[in-house]
Length: 441
Image (cartoon, rainbow, N blue to C red; front, side, top):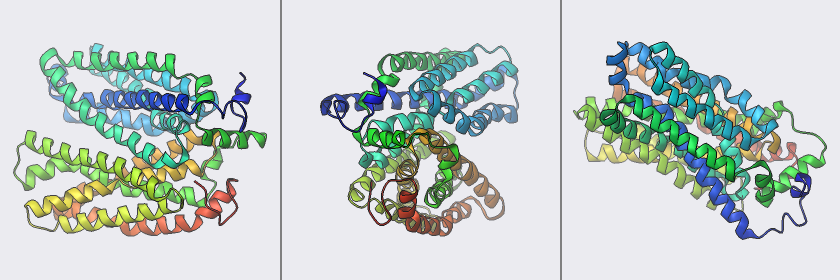
């Protein structure tokens, strides 16, 4: 069967048994999510080996930090161009190639005989992982209904948080009992195995034939116009641009938790480093759970009125801001911890809704590029900027006060979401989905 026939909006393809589609969607989610765990475990296993690397190679803290930061740098620089290539030459091929690169580079990290060799291997880890988040999510969204995009986007991104925690925990156990090189080898081999399985199960042809009808209709509509969307279309509507910026700024709060929660528990509650890290892990896990559950809630609430995704985002931002501003001003104790946990649960709730809106407001042929743009905004405006702002403020007013001030960025995020909601109907009309004023998923 030709791919063009497979993508037709009517006929045999759309009549394929729903069971086959559902099974394939579950398989794609399982493998794509597993590779995401491998991605972040390969990235974060390094931090678990810091003490051993410092001893063996005589490294300063600055050089250790460089080994970690260079991966994020490569991701920021290469995410968009690599995602564009994935859109053009095949997303499943790109997924397999990226997984093989980061897996081999992780194994190479365990074979490094010097700091320079290790740094080079980490550069390739970053290059391999650069566009996986955007391309992997684009593949995942293509096999699920449009009404589940918030849930899928949130669940997928939450996997990065889970993978980070697992990478440190599993890597630490392996490094302690089998040596730091074994930690890298195990992570790399696991990634290679997953890449092989993915290549055997998820092909371009199978993805086209078993994509969800919602996706097939969008692809067919775009093909009927006779040309692929241009790259600049990822910025073509005011609504999608506001979604990029709003989500990025709000995720600075999540970035604050990732970077500073262990220090906060250590300084303010007097916990040991190990106990503070464990407590911080609980907070970070809560963020991941919140992302997923709030994404699901958004899909339920916005099933018939898609613009409610913007409203849900506003509610999550407000709840998080109020809980954290109040919580960090309460005296130490259960009440403060409850308020902080509530704020953490809601702080990244915006990710699912905005991921769904970015997907909806861009053409299928440039979807990976659009999601890469969203990811870069999340990383640069959020996960990178938030910890830096808190660090600067903490030097002047103390860590607790600084962490209580950052959520006030909601005063900027909320107007962006309001403007985005107002521009949403016009944005949908511009990309050819529905006339202004008519709802669409």
